[in-house]
Image (cartoon, rainbow, N blue to C red; front, side, top):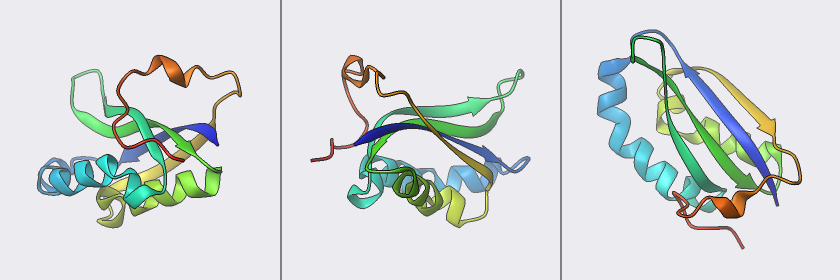
Length: 108
């Protein structure tokens, strides 16, 4: 397994659509994308004024393709709210054990 930083930026002003989809998005995150990944931690990304502009997460996954599949399967992405997805590998020494309460079940 490896760790990845997932960064998803949203198109401008999808606030209403994001609110409608938020319960499905949270269920997707909580399930690890139906068991594809472990979501260790994540949150919304905001601009300087505090408006939501996207989301990020630290993922545990077998590879970057699986991490990307998780991001692309998110209800926000499937509904067209996401303008870009970036999957960045984290170094082998990433201290995942310091994250006390993962947001989804741990893999394997």
